[in-house]
Image 1: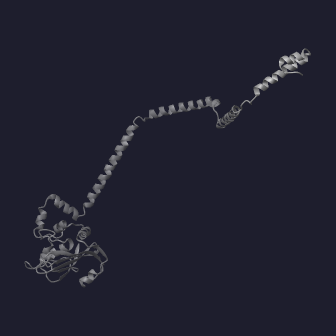
Image 2: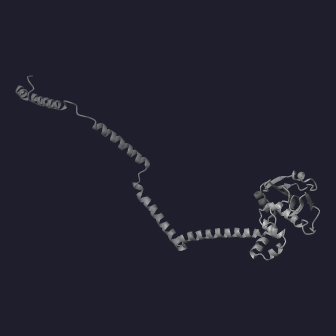
Length: 316
């Protein structure tokens, strides 16, 4: 990150508006007597970005940012990262009861060719994109742009008085985390996590495949040859069986023909069963038998009258 312009109003020891231009400076030193506001400039940069200053006992103690006997504070920092320019603006207000609240938080993108020597309001009006407008979104946006949290920023970029000694005497893990963040070594941790995940997935797949292979442990070349011989034997037996059963096979057409004949015969049988003997058929058969007997007697030429009388047929 490279600071380009810092505007302070009502912050710390700066009651009146002050603008600091860093555009034509590669290296600079803040010099002056004690209490002249050197550290306040550093605090203003931290406040604009993260809403806190290293000297505050607590990060959210924003009332310490306000200059004495003022009710309005505004800090604006225009900075450059990776060839792009951004502006971070924070404003505070104090109520009549002395309560300090955040009035504005703003993180925007500015054109790269913008002239930073103009009026601050005009500069902020040239925004290309609004990145954040709330304290939480602004802190997340600054961390994303700078790649540093507030703790890392105040331990590496801006070291408060005695901060360097604190860094040197910090726990090994704390220094390691800071250096990893500063040098961008977190990518290797992500690569390690990805490699571990792929290793676990491969290990799981290999375990499943070994389980499946165990189910086919008896699938040897000898078993395969034995199965092939058995298959050939069964195939030959199947062909022989088909030849033996050929005479007994009934085709579908023959089966349908047989079914049709059975159906027709069943219909004929039902029709025959529905026929009943006519009334008087028995008496008609008796009468017919008597007449046949009379004709036999008449042919013989003897005793016709006695015969008819005996037969009960009456006179001729």
